[in-house]
Length: 337
Ligand code: KG4
Ligand code: ZN
Image (cartoon, rainbow, N blue to C red; front, side):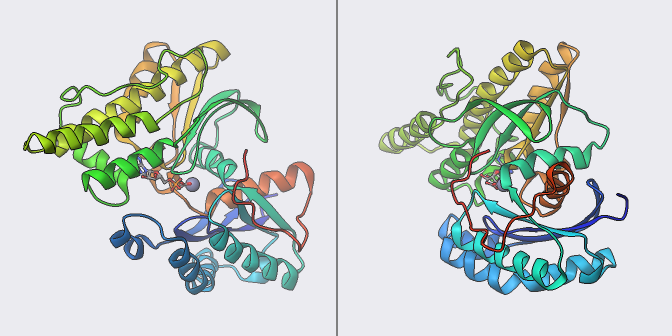
């Protein structure tokens, strides 16, 4: 109902986040404390540091989410928490906090799959949106192409057979020394580069499946860097970023377009961190428009990890099956959709 307030908690990677959502889609607060500065010098997320930071930040972030929403613990109707996939240490911090709140205030504890959370971000940003849709959830940990007619009932039509697309962005950025986190750094660099400057492979683009592969592309970039250095030549980082990004976007776009056609849908969704990529949005939008189809993606702030999407997914899960998790809920680092 209108007054159903869900506290969402997210700690699967390097964002400590808490949010209060009214009903399923009205975000009253969404506090996101990024640990990116603590991980930057290591060029990647260090699990042990992430766990410790989540412990430090969790309670203050929850307090801030409640304060900003103007509510207290006693007003909450449910608490929803990410229980996987992700880094086990971080997940456990969020789960422990959620269990304590659920127990102390006698409200349901709802376990949320992080990938499903990313899907719900779209329905927060576009409350009128209705399935059936084709949806690409693409982030640092997963690249899944989905079709669904009902929320909660997802058909996975394709996924990566090796690296996630975001992981490829992060690894390529690392070898290029382009900055951390890699995705936004490459996105920015690419704007100043020529996407046709360097010839890179588009793995599996013509394969009849909807699966993806990005590790060969990553290797091709690595080889290009090594060969160029061996010749004693300078690497044009902007051109390399643009060419790499174009290769990823071409593959993602080709498969999404074919899936939308096969499934006969008019609406296509992007979700997960890589949904923030400007070239992916632009190119896909253009191609879909040519066919009278529409592209949706969440506002940039809720594309990447945040607790509002977890609260929203938790609310709808609870409304659908009224199934609370037990106090023995455990983290599932390799949870799939
Ligand atoms: O959803 P998310 O915050 O965390 C996971 O669930 O993994 O996604 C993070 C991923 C990272 O790999 C990051 O490099 C990528 O999303 N990312 C981007 C962009 N912004 C974030 N990749 C490409 N372009 C972007 N603008
Ligand atoms: Zn995520």
